[in-house]
Length: 165
Image 1 (cartoon, rainbow, N blue to C red):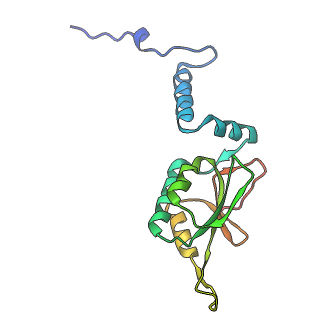
Image 2 (cartoon, one colour):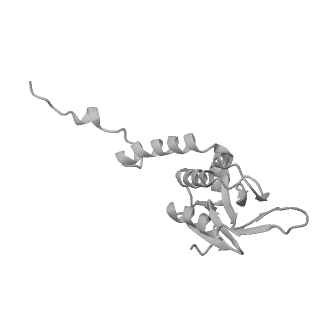
C-alpha cells in the first residue's frame, strides 16, 4: 500500500487578504486573549492605548515570593486601570492581589517599614529595600524609583517614560 499526501485535505482555510498561516493563528490568539482577559479590561486597554509591561506569570512570581517572605509589614499602594482611585500604603494579602493582577497599572513598594511599639516608645523603622529588590531582581522585574518608593509597572500609557532600574 502506498501512502499518498493529499494537500487539499491538510491545507488551512484561506481568508480574503490573508495568508493561510494568518488565517490559522489569528483566531487562536483571539480566543486565547478573550479566555484570559475579560472584555472590560480589553476595552480599557484599547481606549487608553496601554502597553503591558508585566504578564500574569511575573505577577504570580512576585506575589508568591512576597507571600513566602511572610512579612505583613511590607506596605504597598497600587492603582488599577479600572479606577482612578489609588489604594494607599497598607499591608496586603498577596493571593488576593494576584486576582487583580491583570488590572494593575502600577504597584509601589514602601521600602521603610514602620512598626508600632507603643505610645511612649517611637516606632521601629526597618529598611526592607534589600529584600524587595532581591525578589524583583530574581524574577527580572523591571521597576523604577518614584520618590522613595520602588514602582513596578503593569501598564504604560503613551506619555509614560519611566526610567527603569
